[in-house]
Image 1 (cartoon, one colour):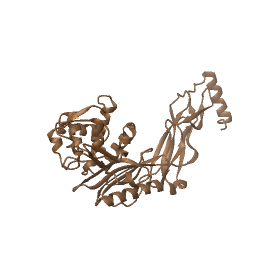
Image 2: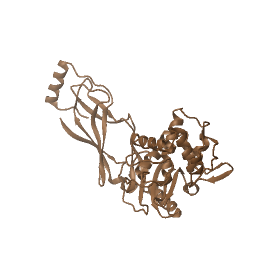
Image 3: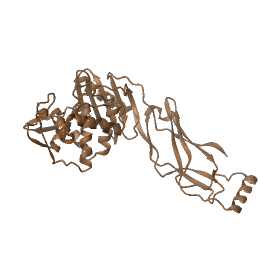
Image 4: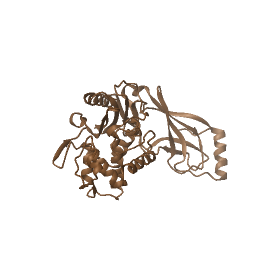
Length: 373
């Protein structure tokens, strides 16, 4: 028995590409496959400004989803929250505000006061809530994030990377589809004050539906954005830009590039037969090989015809074989692309022949060789 290669297929994957951006920090990700299309200083712990409010929103969404909090529940407004500077929802001191309004106050109006109301409502103090944010961030895989407040207000310990911000965005989109549409709301009125959503792409970019802007003197101008075209969603995080106009134009340019230059291609579906493998001394002569999950990868359109995958396995496969047992691998290799290996699993059980059956099969193999495919 020896390792063999069976069949050649078009590759449907790629690695991050070289593409210039004026952003100091950036990452562009295909949501379906998780492929990073572009990254620049993506793991640097930077000042995230109001983009870190996404973590505050995530903490709130999780409480709503687990039933420990309801949209109609109310939180009291402390003097600290009322006095908070920067962008505001304009809550009234010593009033109570429904969660559904606080969410829009944070998402649409970027209200620092609303963030403090939520922090104090969920954890008694903003400091305690920030500690919970850091702990929860670690639990969901944030590797370069620490939180000192719920707002993104300048602080040396308020830090996130663009990769971590993209992870939070993915959580908000994928785990909370019932709440995510709030990010696309363009206006919200509270206390008689109507404010527009600060995300510029909602007004000018086809398919944009989230997420959050940010700006401080230290951070520059940043944006966590997401857009969907023809069923394909991209998530972009940029920071360190020099102006509101530059933030908007660079985000549009990078999203355009991602949609234009890359596509998603289906190779196999979960459970579909990829190939049959010969079986050694089994009750069946062949066993179908399948993959566990759908195989959809992102590929630069111009490189599609140049990239290939092969199937590697050792034949014949000795019986007994259990359904789900790894038998081989789909191997993806291409220039400037990390090798990808996807397990090939037995699609069914194959029992081992009895003693006399094994002797007969072994004799037949020695006399005539392996059965033809």
